[in-house]
Image (cartoon, rainbow over all chains, first blue to last red; front, side, top):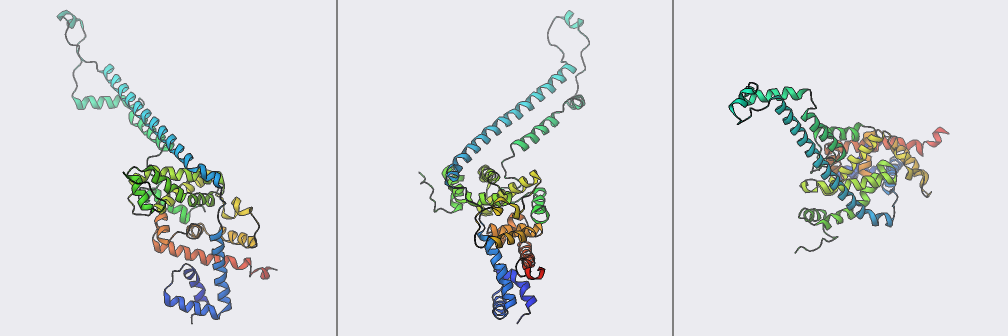
Length: 195
Length: 186
């Protein structure tokens, strides 16, 4: 027959049903003949049973009656909000791109076509046409000190993430798995975090 | 033409119907799980308003994400994980966790014959280390299986079990002074 200490260490497995048949028989035989261990086991089982019965209050039929309709309204409102935000993001991106193009054209005006020979002669010497690669580099240089497009888009993404997160549940993907960084947070909270 | 979803349909069937465009199937999923999710929210956050908001938000996120659900976890586990993530986020954001023993429903309510013992047990649970308390919470309050707890917490089944056993052992140690130990202190 196992000693009391060994039995009490196994009580947790026993109450969780995580014990093999032979150990269970041994343990229950011991409990039947040992008042101390039996009291100990009874205390644990009673405590867990109390927790199981410790239900949160029921908010009542009026609350549940409106739950579905409020949820539908919430989904509809969220859908509208996300649509508006995404349109705004696209519009902002287009505006920034147009502004960038305008800056480029002001800085590197194209050679006018047509006109008489005198008109062409009266015009300043044409700017040398740049190869595409060089033009890109110049444009990037010009935009460096202006509100950068990437930064603006990044800000918009951050805003969207904050206000209307992507279509994945918070920190969980469609399979209920969490990405490594968020998963770390979850596990930290569950296992080591602030209870 | 597809028949209406039935309350007897399993979650898997209802999810499949929803993915085929049957919105009524989602309503049945909501009706089936709303009480459990609300209670989870209440136990984590300790007040009706926050529990309600959590339940609504959890189902809204489930609605948005269900089209990518491939059923490798059960719908209930998946939904519970969404709700727990929201609850943890809410607690982080308000920077003040509601300890089990401080939750409103745990201080008021009818004084039944075992009210004093309940309070003592809650205090004992509230005094457990966070990791043990939270696994105990998922196992006992939510009635989840170890496989589900492991999936939700992103840990192995063995770790989930070991943590639960530690929690029960710790609880055992904390319960002794609550009743049997009273004489020792007197």
